[in-house]
Image 1 (cartoon, helix red, strand yellow):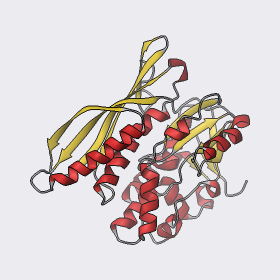
Image 2 (tube, helix red, strand yellow):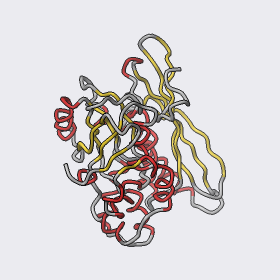
Image 3 (cartoon, one colour):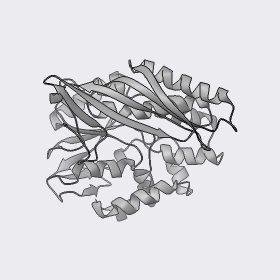
Image 4 (cartoon, helix red, strand yellow):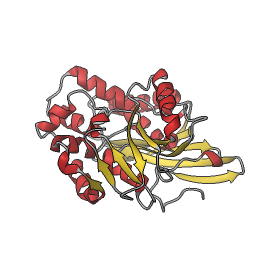
Length: 311
């Protein structure tokens, strides 16, 4: 076992031989968009993201389905599965089966197996002093999805956030070759600050983040100022506020965004300072247009994130 339960990492990694290890992960959730096909795509992209975050590539996937067969038309499930299958194919993986149960609430996701060379396994720990922190997708999906439920955003923003959530982290992960990366994770339910905390917890480094550099989904700051914030934001803040320095100097609505629980968010990549701009250029050339350096790992305070409003 190369990566197990002890580090709260994105997936488990088991060595099969000197040059091959498997990555295993599972994720499923209730619908967050109205369109069934889009939901299938988002759920599949979200599940496979853990494989990319560990430095691997998805190999096989299995459907996980909880479906209210007595109250929902089967055509809805068919469209969700079609969306998931198309995303699996886009990742170059194979659907090999799955399991379904009858449930009062619809849920869908995947169990995914990937492969990686043992020496190339990435974890959420290991960042070095001086490394830059790169994010590959804008944040704010939780707030936008809450606004969608209240009919507070237009179709253009709905399409934008759906596209962000359904985009694989494959393009970003494919640019890791030849880059000095020390740690990696993806941004999901614990929010940007929550997952950034995982990168320094128990480590001999601190982290400085510049909130004004964090890429945001259109309209998310205005929505946060209106109080359109999911309940998970408050839980994330309560859990991690002791790790954060300088929050009092940041606009409260921006803090809500930094704690906002994400669905199928981008990667957080700790990379050697000298390699960061080259990696950014490669990522943007591949279409990862929001890739941005948002912080740096520092000598101290250790196990703390310090927020700076100016560089």
